[in-house]
Image (cartoon, rainbow, N blue to C red):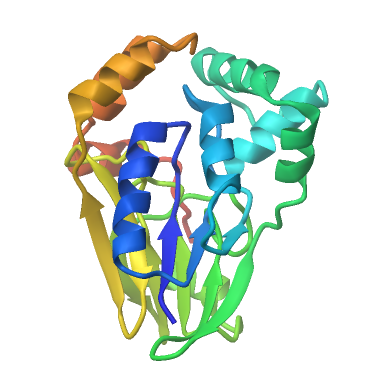
Length: 249
């Protein structure tokens, strides 16, 4: 069985379509969408693309979905800067009642047994909380309590938009990276699980994608294109920026 894990799409439909082409070419049997389909510049089109797939799909919620659903309920899920609140509110206003109901039904984690890999748990941030931050540099001693006793040989996560593959005790922890907003090299990052866990990077037409996103009514379309599509921040910079917020012992 081959399982593709795609995380943190953030409404970037051109990136998603490019990755889906490669997933089909890899003959994946299942796609796990690991949260943060939302918010982003093309939320409705992105959801429609995922809902129309003929390959079986499992969804889990990320902090983005939690925040958008909270906004629809007139609440705020997390303490967020004004720019993030604006993006979340705009995205929430684009969703139909049917889309909101579908997103609301997604669980926080998903489990499956993959031959050659073993029992795998998919979460967004950590198995405990979709909004918790850790990186490839977070101390193992800090993470051990989160990953022990889960009856999974592999944990797949996202949230920080940076791929890694590391051990926490006896558990393999793999960050699939971000399809729509990767930090580091421009393009789209994802994960293919089969006889092994393979981190993948997909190149696509960034110029055409930028033009399409600029034409949306997303309130931060220009910033999204410049800072997340064409010139994403380096991994080293983001590791430094995440440092104050990452899990600590």
